Length: 418
Image (cartoon, helix red, strand yellow):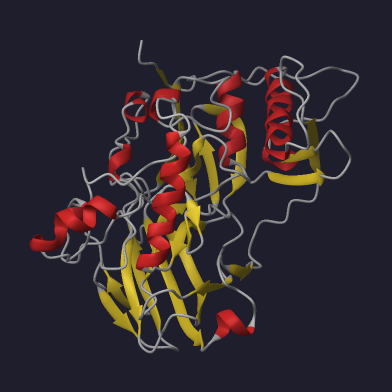
């Protein structure tokens, strides 16, 4: 096993650990450890809410989830010799739930969760159709996941980190804050908001000295969106065996990781759409000196996906085009087309007895494939969502005998602000 350089004690909060990570992006957050090119090491990761979500049959914790506290990130890890303009090469050697802990109160101890976030607390991809909070708990058995809240479904998890990235430079951070602030200013009262500005409340900044904490917290960027440094990209194919090439913006690169997922569908459409968990990552790092200019990677990571994903061979695919539910024509709006494809899949699954919310939760957690199928045929973009048929305990394909009805046990927990 590689050397453990960032341990976490499951009995303690993220901020009470021997080594403290962070939940904001800023170039002045000091490294928590140093590694060398060619090193392999292990990192423990806490699930993104640090234990705020519970293994129960209530969705009140999802409704009230403290978004100002996320993400609980492990790091930063500085790489000796890394300088701006280099490419940081990160190999994911292994990834999984919390080692040797298959039961307990923390996500990752034999279980994980998927949540539909309410519109008033962040929303999701289909927030106009699903404005309230819902939750599904998933139990792990080896590589498989099942849920008492979504019956007759079992699938192999595509375990991966949802968030991994390098620290921004001061100049890049300033660009983030300026452009996102300008977007917010176009509709400052929107619910959910158009972007998340810096928020000093609940900021965790590693070993930043108290004398500098308020200044850094005031400008540190939230970790929710993906940006030029990688970050919260939620790419389900960053599995064991993946190699990622990250641009380096600061000396040392300052790599951080977190937001582990046992499984996820393309798009993580419920916002908390993956099966969230804590766990571990084994990483290997190296450098390509001057790689950003050599390979034209001025921003955003490129990667080689791992080869350990489950090999589903049969799919039921749903398509959508860029026309709103009330019939308004949009011009080549691929996001709207993907929303419509997802809604068509949800409508289809309700014919088998699933509630719309159960179907929505399933699309967020199961290894669905999302694709842009046509983006040039004006005025309609076409997007498709592929649902693996083998994850169901019954034949989900259309047939002359009609749909079977799934057994209904506990429904997906629901909570609203009303």
